[in-house]
Length: 294
Image (tube, rainbow, N blue to C red; front, side):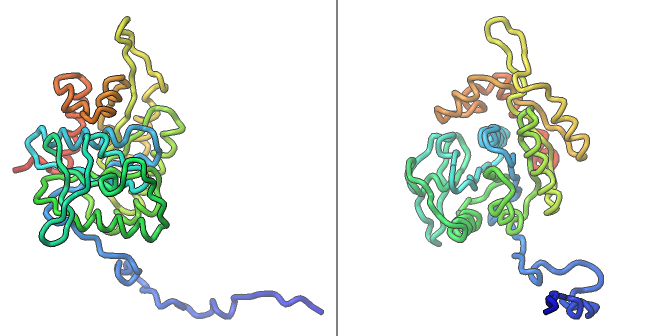
C-alpha cells in the first residue's frame, strides 16, 4: 500500500487563516498579553538584572537603592527572586509584614529604604517548593499588592535568567529602564548579553551596564590586578550593543563582609572609594531617567 503523506497544503491556501491585521501591530490584549501598568504610588521603576547567578547583582541593587536614599529620595527595593531572596539578609530585616487597612503588605524598612521580599513571608531555611502558577501568583501580589506609601524610585532585584519571572515583570509593569550587571569573565558576559537581548526584544530601555568585581587592589603591596580578566570585554559588549557603560565596582573583601552582616557598603563605609563607586552609578542611572528633576 502506498504510504499516506501528511500535508497541510489545503490549510495554507487561505490567504489569512488567522485573521491577523495586514498592517501595524496587534494590541496587547488581543494577543493575550496583560496591559502594562504602573506600580501604585511609585514614580520610577528600575530593574537590575544579570541573567547569570553569582555576579553580585543583589548587592549592587541594594546599594543603588541606598544610594538613592542618600540623595534624599524616597527609595525602595523589591526582591523578585521567589526561590532565593537576598534582600532580607542584605538589609538585616526579618519578620512577617503587617497588612494595611486595605489588605496590602506594608514594606519593612531599614537605612531609609523600604523593602519587600518573599524572604519575609517564609522562614530563612524554608524552601519555596512551588510550581509555576503559584510562583506567578506570588509575584503578581508582590508587584501590585504592596503599600509603598509613595516612592520616588523602586529598584527591582530580578532573579537570574530570562524566563517566566522576567517576562511577567516586563509584561505587567511599566519599567523606566534596566541595569545589566556582569563580571569581567566571558562565562558571565555571555549570559549578560542574553539579558541585553531580552530587554531589547521586549522593548525595555537599557540604562547601561555595570561591571562588578572588576579590579582587586592588594591591601599590603597596593598593586592592582584584574582577577577575572580585563574589563575590555564588558566595554566592548556595550559598544557592540549600543548601550552605556555605567561604571566599575571593585573586588573588595569589605563589600562582601558588609553585605553578609546586613549593612551594605553605602551605609557601612559611606566615604570609601567603594561607596563612591555605587553613588556614581546611582547618579548616572538617575540622570538617565530624570530622577533628580524636582
